Image 1 (spheres, rainbow, N blue to C red):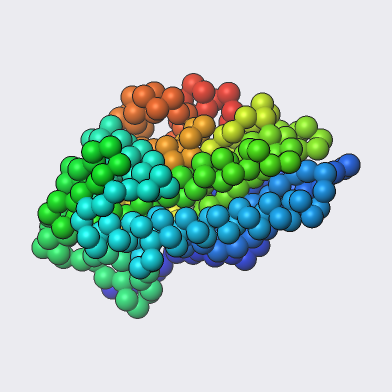
Image 2: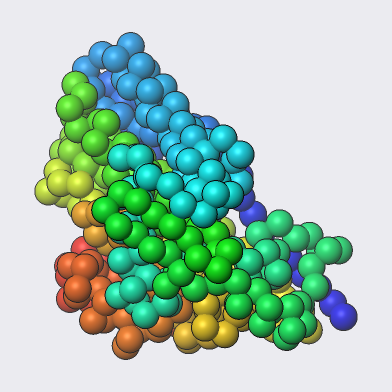
Length: 341
């Protein structure tokens, strides 16, 4: 049985797996400064524009430290010191003001997508182990193992009452499908009152832009060509209104194995326990809200194009869909933003 893995993650020159930021940071009269790091299991970056280099440097350091804090102390199911890990261990607790919005908003998308997004899916993800496996270690799990794992999931086992939360039937919460988007919102709240003109924050395949650059040119966020090589773009989204915009992509090219000609990717359908088969290669969601952009990109990938449209409308979000044949479908709002290569 031949096996190939196509999975990559990393920081080298901050190549973003799902999105490629087109515009290299330039400045004519004022300063721009970039900072790159690794957190939340992926590459992260902060780029700020302003008048004084030292202020930008301090701001960028603060934002990266903030991302790491939320990762290690609030959102990570892996970190023993995080609030979420403590919840998973003890089954009930009073959520902090830092964790509460992440869980409540994620749960809302679980409900509204009828489980296409399920933040209790970790046991199934562990069975597949596509995130961590190597060429040598990856195996397709048997049906019994998948069924057993599915029985340990179900977002309806999460009970939320104000800021109190409890977990039933031994489920655990994993915010891997929403936390990177949520951190964009956290960073925006920290950045909006800083003495800067604009900023870009990336966390893996999620990007947030707001404000302006010195030359007043638009922000351009690329959408990868699923059939192309890393860095090949099928088009880009253009923003020029100085407002906050968050963009997240879910694609089957990010982490996957091919076994005997069949692609097994990391986006699992919670209902079947197998990699989602929606006819799509990628979904890019545009929203003012970072968490919703991240959560909806996963849910819409599982749902497929037609079933995603009511969900996107409910959240006032736009999307670009690319199917397995590289055909592009867009919501009306996305058509106004998308420029094809």
